[in-house]
Figure 1 (cartoon, rainbow, N blue to C red):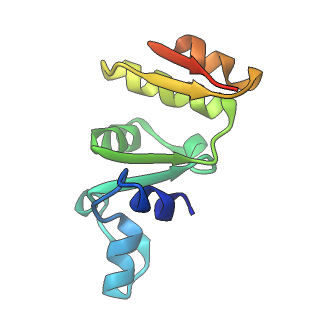
Figure 2 (tube, rainbow, N blue to C red):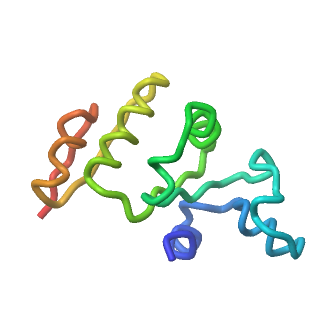
Length: 110
């Protein structure tokens, strides 16, 4: 999974909500999100995120976005920029061009 790979290569070093829930033997929904140091967000979650969710997610130092569509990549860029962040995006196809163009730094690969 994205979380496993991110931990192996050092993108995530802290605990996620899922890690805490597993240790405590409870459902992830029972863990207060602020207890986690890291966050993994899937493309399936993005359409349901509210401003407060974006604020929480983007306040983390360790974030992984996994399985996102080109439109969702653009949303991620815009949400970061709304908060004054400088955003770099890598992409490997024409579908990534909206996010590459909107980002402060766009790196096309392939």
